[in-house]
Length: 264
Image 1: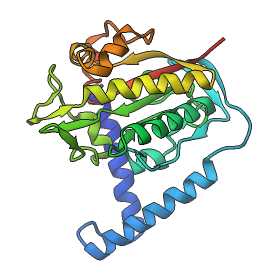
Image 2 (image 1 turned 90 degrees about the horizontal axis):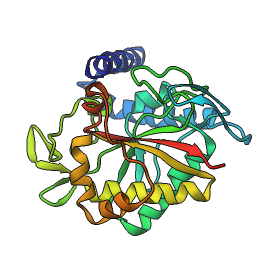
Image 3 (image 1 turned 180 degrees about the vertical axis):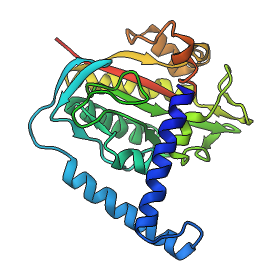
C-alpha cells in the first residue's frame, strides 16, 4: 500500500503542477498563490454543483472489493465542522458515495457539531461516481466505503498541524500506541474516533444502513477500546476488524476505513 500510495500521490502532485502551469501561476509568488487558492475554491464549488448528482436514489452493486455504483452522490467539500482532505483527489472524482452513506456521514457530523463544537474532522477517499476499481485501494468500489482521517491531539489539545498534507497524509506513520513517529507529543485521539464511529452507526441506522466493518490497524485497538467511548464501542455490535494482512494493516495507522451495508 505504501508503494502504490506513493505512485498515486505522485500522479496527483503532477496534476497539481500541471494545472498551475496551465494557469500561468507560480507557487513562489504570494499574490499568484492567493489567486490560485481563490481559483481552486471556485473550481471546487463549480465541480460540486455540476457533479452532486440527480434526485434519484443510488444503487450499490456487487461488493466493496468488486462492484459498481449507480447515481453516486458527491460529498460536499466542506461543512461547518468537516472538510474533504485533498482538493485534487476531490476534483479527480474520488469523493462519491451511495446517497444513504452521504446522508449518514453528514448527519453524524451534525451530531458531532453539537456534542464537540470545537472540533474539525476530515473525510478522506470514497469512490468514483460509477464505482469500480479505485487505485490504490482494494475496496471503495460500490459507494459503501469511506476513509476518515484520524483526529489528533498535541499535549491533550486538538491538533490540526498534519491535516493539510493532502494525499501525503496517507504516508504518515504512527506507532502502536498511536504516537506520531516524528513527534511523539502528537497522538491519535482515540476517544473522538470511537465517538464518531458510534454516531455514524446511529445516523446510518436511521437511514436504513449500518456499519458493516471498521478497519483500523489492529495494534491500535487496545488504545481505542480503553477510552470512554471506546468501551461503548467494544460492547456494541459494530464489528472492528480482528486481523488483517500486514499489507492492509500497516496502511491503516493514520486513517480508519468504514464499510456500510444496507439493512434488510
